[in-house]
Length: 266
Image (cartoon, rainbow, N blue to C red; front, side):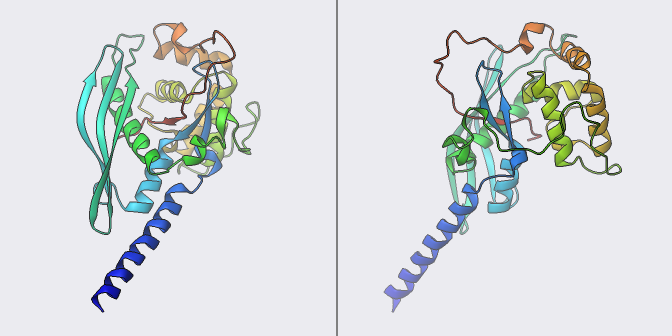
């Protein structure tokens, strides 16, 4: 009798793990994916807010069902690296995977070194890396959206009027798509796009999803003109060369692993 009870418990755990795996591996909404050409070839990116949302939905709120334990910070001249463990709860048991994250330290034209942004970005990058070990965003790693070949976004062309705003509520998916479409046209990576929007709005923008609908409309109206995009980038980067896409030496550069949009307030 006791043997059967133990067998039933083990079978139930196996089923729960299979369900958990399925939830973690689910594809994201098409607006979660983006493209980055900053390394001289196309990479598919995944907005980290979607990764955070997936972990919250599967394991529970951050700090209760999952979290990040930082083991060590490594501060270099131009980059900040974090060594950490992503932990998560399953059946009241704590589990963890080792992960690393990194972030480039930006110095603005005025000489301000954005160390705090680097700490936030490195931490979030580590969360996304740890989540990838659990299968989150696995479709990107498997090559389904490899090389920046994204599913249709249905966003408005850059020259179209701004998407209508819905009062002073949250930014819409259509507005997010429109903003990134314009920056993509100007060969601006998502990371640099957020810095440019931060300069325009005079406050930190960790993700486009944090903007209000009114702010998004103002950004879209302003960046319709490529000259304005250039001016924004000049305010962020003291050296214009930092915003340019590197030119590969040949066409046989191997693709690197996909990156995540990683500037979140964690």
